[in-house]
Image 1 (cartoon, rainbow, N blue to C red):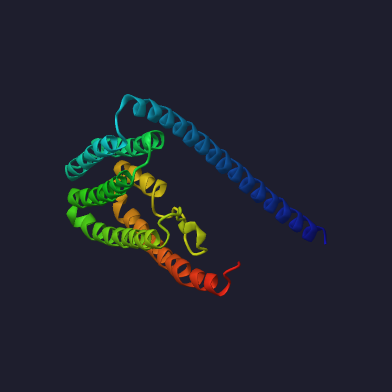
Image 2: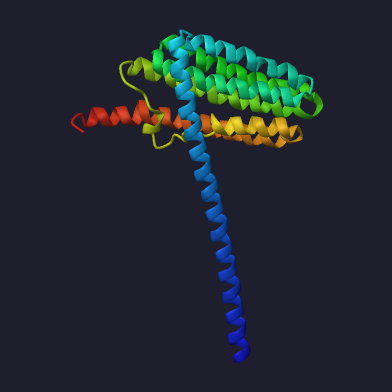
Length: 246
């Protein structure tokens, strides 16, 4: 009996220690997340301040957009030469200019052409970087790059097609995909892709694995947009017609 009690006590102690360790890890993760959010907010405030000064100087958001795009395109050349440090520098500068042009636009006035130019050049930049990794090591990266470009194009087409129909139906309203319960938010775009590009420049041998993960996420993103489009363009409209007072 005494041996059984000791065994149970030992098991409880082990479980308690494991739980305490998990709590410590969780606390560390929450601290890192909180620090990351504070850093992002501080960076955003600095960029907004710089955007106000740039707007007052007369430099347009479109000029900054094009400048950042040209710098970013140089990453393709550096990637093809396996000069990953220079490629990473071009990618970081491109993303900085992308954030800056938004800050300038918010202070000087957002235009339809500016939104179009920013989105178009972003898509070309990301596709170009994938192409650059394929050029760096065609034997190892080409097929994975083709899959990622296929998935990336699928998600981009779904998003752009949604935007066209949504604008046609509600041109006077701000459109939010998040109104749909099927839309997955920022999955496979923005911060996730940016972090993936940084990791790939630091550890280019991981391209195959990361390309597959990003490709799958992009396909999921495309499917979520299709589901959101069906919900917003069919189900929601049908419910609105059946319940006009709702």
